[in-house]
Figure: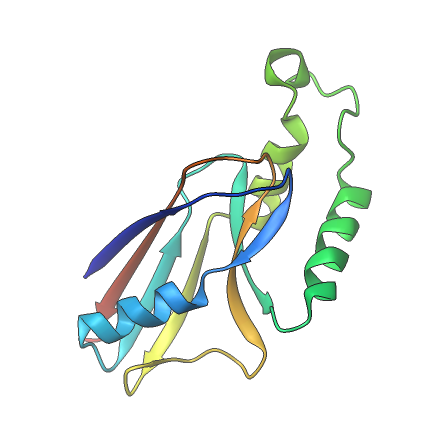
Length: 136
């Protein structure tokens, strides 16, 4: 089963918890054991698994990433549309995550959440694909 949806982002960089959408996709699929695959088809966004309960984690994550990958650091791609750092962050973070499903539940850790990573916002329409597959 595949579920697709869009979200809007409101800041240049932000993390948005999309765990609820993945849980809903798993429940709607009726699959008890398998995998939930989350895919972000954008070159300036990504997806991570991390804590979402404490908003400071989101801030710390983005601050650390921004220290490692500077914006406007004389990247050649910035001559085109001024978002080279967003492309680099997306490539390093990755555009997918796979979570096992057992007894109809995502096997996330106690504090883990699935978070969409915006690196070049705000954007009115970011597409997310969730595919739920059964073990065979």
